Length: 638
Image (cartoon, rainbow, N blue to C red):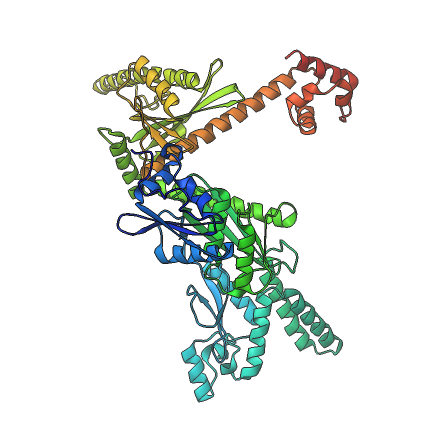
């Protein structure tokens, strides 16, 4: 592969002004669209030596055959032009968004003579005002049922409305009290429009005003002994409380904000968009993103905001947008949003208080959504079959690896070294066959990997011989009618021979594992390693890694194996560390479990406790001078 791209512009050709650039392939298709404050500085990154580029960036620039750019007057214009071109060309190397599903909205058809409230997934109704999205369709219906008790607006269909207005007979929903429009013959068109305005104001966050007004009217009716009217106002207040209780108060009443929780790995990201109006979460939208190029968290936030607000109406843009990290062009994004909204918009990172708590909740939901997204892909039978077949082809195996074992080594600054073995059969985890290993003495990670695999491979022949002996004994017993019946057999510690070993790491870890397979006499077992930084697949003895496509089911399976092995290793290490800490402090005479917990909570760790003097230890309630001296002496002799 040549180290210089043939279409690289000559020095000085690229301008230094802000602008938007496009990479195209030989057929003229736009592969990637990007913006820059300084085109020359940004594009020079793509034309660095190929071996220094991230694998996915290298794949894009080598697929492209030309690059072109357009200079604009300001950074805001480059933001707008980039969004327009991404929408127009759908470049395959830009991030790709996939809504987890089509979310339902509550819509008020303001363009109608008598607006009605409906549940819809259509975001293009002319003149409609939308609220949501809602995570479940029943949540919208329940909200509407409660709201029309307070604001009785039209719910009937257009056909029913026209028939009722033409005949003078109320529509059927109006007859049963489910429709409060003019077709019910209870209000005029003007009065109904005023109720619709109140409905929209309430849903837009004006709950406090309506609560105060209804409370005042209820008290006035009660003082005037008009108890029937007071009961009506009371019921409406209860309906308002029921609506508000469905959306817990998380921020100040006057807060209108959108919060974006983002969780990502090397190839995908999950976004949780919390819509907060009037201090309450009015809607949640989940989105999954495929990342084609290696982009930073700030660039990802930039792309998410462009995608969310690019086609949004002014009413859908809040006063405040809260994100986990500010993009580099945060000021330009703010100006872009302000121009679309027509009012001031602030783009911030929530660092403390209830806003930060809610942002953490959104981020936690995004993390769970990302795990679920990856799990669903590997749990689907068709996806699992394709993953195993793709893995067979990519690694050059004779058959699909139905049993895969993955190994990871974990340590704490070189100490307390442990390793994990996780097992997947037919693409699914077999947690009953997971194993953990302690590594008492080692020189580095590769030596730890070698030791662990030698210990595991020693059981391959032994367990197979045991299984053969048990099978022979069972066959002999079947021929002997006097032989005792065996109803339970002790299963071997390692039940089956793996068809593929996966190690967490690159070429050094794979070389150590290959040496273990050779020394154990099992070179026939297939082996590969997955390097986390670039998601490369390394094979023993190969100079270059195997690069699986970003959307490959095989890559998702290997990622999940690696992540599960890492999780299991960390869990085992923490358990051992906790046991070791308890054992050390348990050696102190007179120090029970309750006091150990109190000491660790106060000092934070055994290391911090070991640095404390006896006088500092006695400051803790229940610890006397004699016991403090004993603790200090025990930890000093460790």
